[in-house]
Figure (cartoon, rainbow, N blue to C red):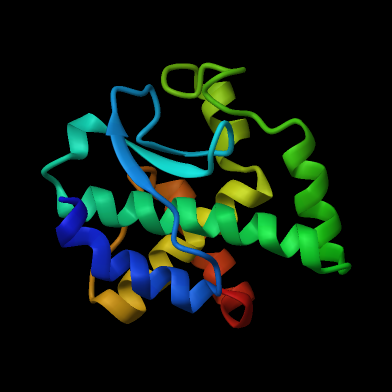
Length: 155
């Protein structure tokens, strides 16, 4: 799968202006995760090892998080300040039950950095890759669509 997804990785990284980082598959709780230590890499849940669509969503989503970190490090605007604050103590699968607790899952999904990553994934994969991306939650899908509409110029 890594060879198959490599061209997409290159397109996403170039579009966002970020470096290409290693990707691996592992048995993790999340669908995917951007790991910062000991080295920066993306880990995708092993259950998606043979699923191009899920890998494409994971790669695009996690590369947007990498972009967000670049933005925070370089920019001094309001978005950088909000994202920086969000990265201080983010809700994740490591400190909340985002897979089976609806309150935790909702708080997780509505963090601006997560909403931005979901919206970017939808925007990029639909516009440039011809892939239809729809979040399983109809209500959250409407929020994502509105975010794309309002923030299209920064996606």
